[in-house]
Amino acid sequence: MGSSLLGVVAVAVCVLAAGCGSKSSGPRREEQEVAAMYTLPDPLGEHEGTWLAWPHHYEYGEDYRDGLDPTWVSMTRALVGSENVHVLAYDAREVRRIQALLTDQGVPLDRVDFTVHAFEDVWIRDFGPIYVRDSSNALVIEGWGFNGWGEKENFVLSAEVPKAIADKQALPYVDLQQDIVNEGGSVEIDATGTLMATRSSTLNPNRNPDMTQEQMESYFRKYLGVTRFIWLDGVAGLDITDMHIDGFAVFARDNTLVTMSDDDLSEWGVPDHDIDTLHAAKNAEGQPYTFVTLPLTAKNVTTTWGKQLGYKGSYVNYYVANSVVLVPNYADANDIAANAIVQKLFPDKTVIGIDVRNLYAEGGMVHCVTQQQPR
Image 1: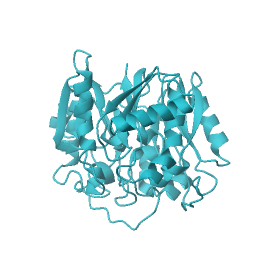
Image 2: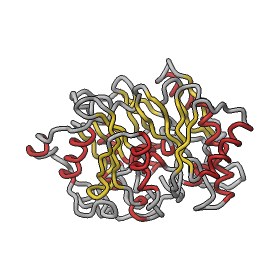
Image 3: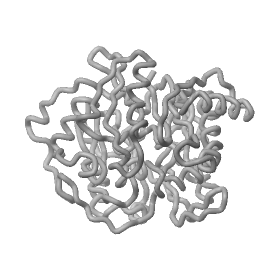
Image 4: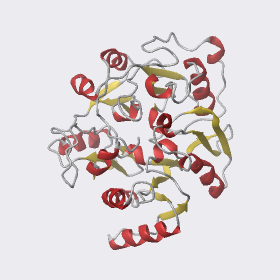
């Protein structure tokens, strides 16, 4: 996610390296034989903590920062009872400001720590560390290339963050930044090793101009332990992310795929043939998914200062922590219904609605600004 508005539908021409709308017959034999060197732990598994990149004023000004602070306070308050909260802060001055803000709001700091490193914007899901396990089950940090969603936004400082965190935590670091560009929010991976993504984002020439789908799959197999792929075409240019998957389709427990109704997917901009592909999806064991649908908001979203965004909000972009689930809320009539659906998905956790209206004006929701660190 980035600072442009999400959901503004633009006329877009799909110019993908793999061919827009191309139907994959599956990986070639040599790609099937690529051995996994690293495996991504189940994102719904136990966490050591959650990473947040705290809003600052250095890139977009104090109004931007002040409008987002309440959302970060709410997320931190919800998470400290579940796990550690690792805050990425721009500088030492920001650390002091954030500590004072949390203390003033009654949020305990005993499970909050700070890492100081400059970064442009808050979307740590896309530029932050990717924690994987090696063949000995030891944690390793991977740094996948980040170029500001196809060089649409500043990104140089943010791209340095995974290495800085690996150094601080004294964890081995795998540097993929010269090989491949891939944002964390552009892929969803379930517990059986199935990856779901849109070609419009992952295979867009503005990220990986010379890479084929088979080559991309080889990286995912080797560095994330993926064994099966669900490719949607997506729509290049629809938003700054070129249609990240985590805005409209995510995996849940028990072979469940959480998405929207067909009508809401169409309103979100998902092409009809992608909706068909989604419904036909199977996991790595060849089993069809059980579908659960979340609504869009009943009305178009309006920020806390009264700005009318002109489009509805998604509840699919939630974040699952150890004992809580943070669900984007919009002061909308559908908040209660969406929270209840997510609660049924995770009956052993407490659903907490997080007001993301101001964040949504900048392009994303809860999942976009969180990153799990496995236990």
